[in-house]
Length: 181
Image (cartoon, rainbow, N blue to C red):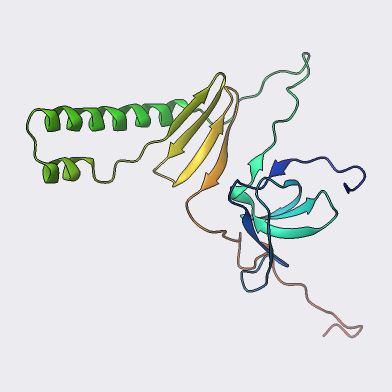
């Protein structure tokens, strides 16, 4: 049964994902099923509060949520620019060229250990599907998604981090009595 007015903004990754009662790793709850549609309700740093189609809600690592494509901008709306994907594409080109050169050397007689040494630390990931592109940003340990007008973080290598000193990114709430203490 779907909650009235529910419109998914994301889906859970194909392997499912852990969930928490609060943006606190010490308070786990039931994990979310793979490809479950969810609606993003709130963000706190890397934490995301999501609403599931059945009305259940939980906190998750928002960086791993898969965005559901939204309708394109209306024809009279101007396209906006965000981060430029060209520097990432250039780094992917350089990494691929280094790997290609190492493969050529291996075919020319380079031993396996030297090949491993030349390719150690190289990481690249590029998926292009028409106007849509996913690039791996090895420098920042994340996958980004680009559709020609925007570059957004898609998934990251590390766990959720909170903004600021508290998980909520703000100072804790204080109770003040009538006399000001």
